[in-house]
Length: 85
Image (tube, rainbow, N blue to C red; front, side, top):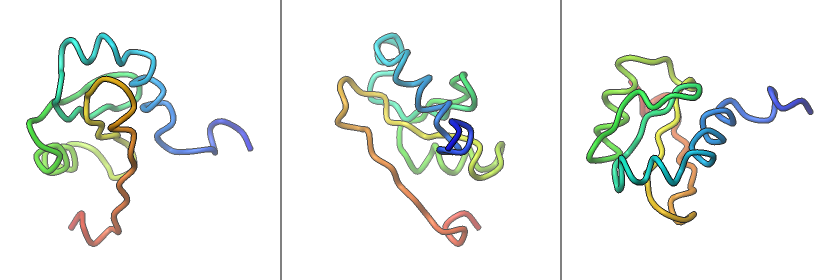
């Protein structure tokens, strides 16, 4: 399977991992919206990040990642399309 087909948000998560230390310095304990290789939003809560991000970006095109040290926030939340209506 090619890298492009392995996961829609691999690029975004790889960006986060590669830049985690510098992102933590700037955005510690915030929820980041990442599109491609760019942070396009930072929020106090996961819920705020979802609400604002879905206003600006199509579902499946952005990653919301809690910005913390280490790997404790490496989780995946999946929702049906009903959650985004």
